[in-house]
Length: 413
Length: 141
Image (cartoon, rainbow over all chains, first blue to last red; front, side, top):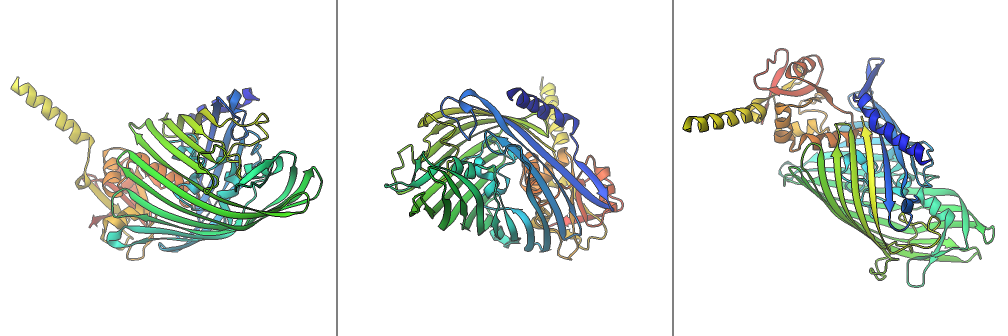
């Protein structure tokens, strides 16, 4: 299997030199643009198996690729779609998915509407978190952009209202209002975590694992709506923003062990608020995001008893990167995730802190190579989401600290 | 010795002048069907960052870029406040979220002028010395 992935990595590395042109064609006198990207990663950690990958032995099981096509039907109306496929450890499994597909009509610069499966605009990078070629990092700050739940959170099936509003000397505002249904990534981390491990509320708050339970989840989804506001301030290079999102997720299926009975997890409240900033001066970029997501969920235990769990997770990061030359960029970020804010933050079961040092090499306009070191403190095993630290791939338990090297090569055109 | 110093300084200045350009060395051009004769710097920035698809006369516009070179570097820095690398990253974020297309990018002044001349709503930039027959020059306020 590793030979296959090495061959795939080699193909991804050399292919772009053969494909270094944007692929456009015309149908019915209309320009169709086709773009694609692909990346191959490698991770090695001194402890734990992270993101369902066998990272403690070194794993190449981190591959993704996408292709999209779009065209302008009129000056105001655009359509497009993107297919996406990924494999990451035990997730994804190379099952292709429709990543986004929508029509976009712009009435005015200050008012447009997109409808279909739409990338969700939240924070600085939510809708572009999976495009490694846009970022300094091989792995985005996992506190805010968990790669294992990407498929569930990156888009919604519904519509956006959006626009750009210049306010003379105050700079300009970009807004997005969105609403729709949360998609279901059947091969994503959330369902894998729910299937392979059960969580129940812990006496001190948050959740704890029950290893004797397994489930077969058959449905996951629900409505989601929210808003995002970007402010490009009059200070050159300074962007400020805020986002808000409400979601009502229901997960249903059956317990398969110790007894076969229905399983249902519902959201009582789940509201996420986020603030962010970016400051770019010449080749230096500073960014930071802070996110708060208190939630109450309700689930039935195999005995039939309904229980509620409260979780107030807080996450965020600060990052600094500098592009020295056209081919070299260096950067660092510090990412912090606290699973349940009222509970002791120093407990490694309740936090994940990640200090990262990264180097990005742009081989040419279309190919990049990245290497970065992660110094991770904590494993947050009390979470309702696993945040990369799944119990099943770590049958001997999780160590509270680990170091990890991530290498990634990507191309786009 | 003094002549040698002057020669070296003049050479360095000459090389720098040859490889850099400023806003004064750039002409913003548009297809003749574009109704306005001037644009504000903010409007121009909006057109090239795809947040503005029409100008004050209501005419639809689309940006045309040069692939690289001193005029391109100067335009991106002076009018868009970005580096070429940051601009490419910005365009890619639009393309791969479906929120925009990659703008037309051409290799030289003559190609940009020819494309803008034949394409309704096209707005581009070329060096101040370039021949601009068939297009109109926009004043940037």
